[in-house]
Length: 356
Ligand SMILES: NC(=O)c1ccc[n+]([C@@H]2O[C@H](COP(=O)([O-])OP(=O)(O)OC[C@H]3O[C@@H](n4cnc5c(N)ncnc54)[C@H](O)[C@@H]3O)[C@@H](O)[C@H]2O)c1
Image 1: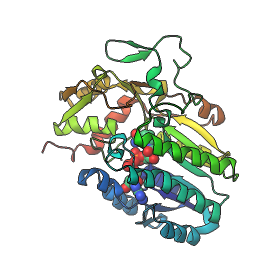
Image 2: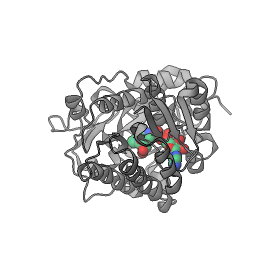
Image 3: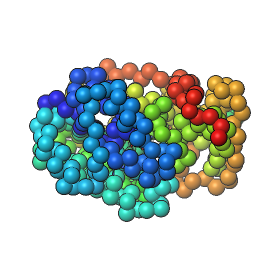
């Protein structure tokens, strides 16, 4: 067993996973059809990242331009590598809340149907391989918005002493709340991944991410929030703030901290695991705080436009807890916080993200 099969290998998490698992000595097979370009336009294409992977990893990386909705194509790939597949890392998705409204069929076919296709192929061809699935905190729908929040000068905060003060844990219900079309397709995938664990004994994990970020993100307005803040600042574009006085809080985790968590799971996989994974208390900011950090790095003021209405179902305050994962995998170490992440995104894009 020597192959890491990575779906969405041109994307933020997929490309970081491809590099990381190649570094562990595995042969990486990446599947990506650049559908991010179809979703969000040319500026969000991930083709550049695939070219970079191929150049940097050489023969350790094989790219397959396949669509995870295409059952015959996927079956052929899984059949070809069969039990050589040591791990499946599933990151391909339609990742945007807002985009899903435009085309719920495609959103569901990619997120829910595509995930089922991966799971069934694992069951048919490589049932020993652990499956690492990128879920999302949007599976909790808008339930976090029912938490008692207090307004501070630059952010919303949870009431002191609340059980979730250290971060929201996996015991929050995902039921009976508003999810958005995207949230619902990701719930379907999340539950199916758990089911292939519980029902068929496959070692699966759902990582329910907060904001996942880093320089490898093809940042665009509808997806890639923190990188998009920096992109707007560097390109002198207007950043649109949707409601909550710009004080909504998100935690943010660097893609390299995400894939080092993947490695820990790969080394000691469990059946039907579910973990929140995000910046947590170590790495979080409100929009206003993120703007101030970006301004400090570039020396340029953010150009912003405020719209009173928040995005439907958008989280007003999300800080997740990594405690369950940390308890099960004590060797995992989170390295980045938001100032470090923004600095790195800035440096990586200094020659590219310039005013038009
Ligand atoms: N970035 C975040 O803030 C965040 C937060 C929570 C969860 N997640 C989840 O993590 C995963 C990875 O996110 P990301 O930020 O790396 O996304 P991304 O858009 O950067 O990468 C996804 C990749 O999948 C590819 N893809 C999409 N549809 C495909 C299809 N039908 N067939 C083959 N390839 C396809 C895209 O071209 C893209 O390169 C997703 O499941 C996403 O929902 C992301």
